[in-house]
Length: 93
Image 1 (cartoon, rainbow, N blue to C red):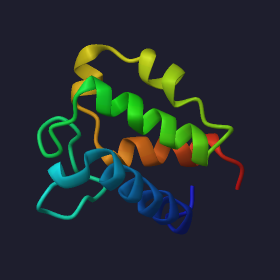
Image 2: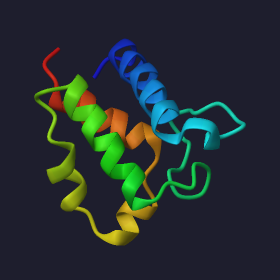
Image 3: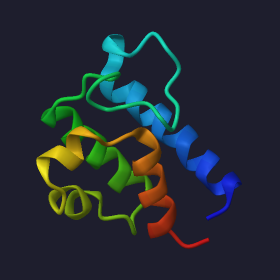
Image 4: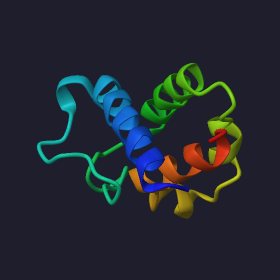
């Protein structure tokens, strides 16, 4: 994984997260270490909306299957960079 590819995916994810969260977005910038639970306050419906945007943008990424394979504790601990890493690993270079 190149740092440049991850940065491009991160930028895309930040746009998607901003769209999903609307006016309820965070005051701080969204970075790789930003927690979905603690910092973004994400709930399950927002994950569904994010999954839809990811699928629309990255056809080859199966975000729903990836997230369904995780335990609740793993989902609660997810950071934006974890999703970026998954997207980068799932897309051709």
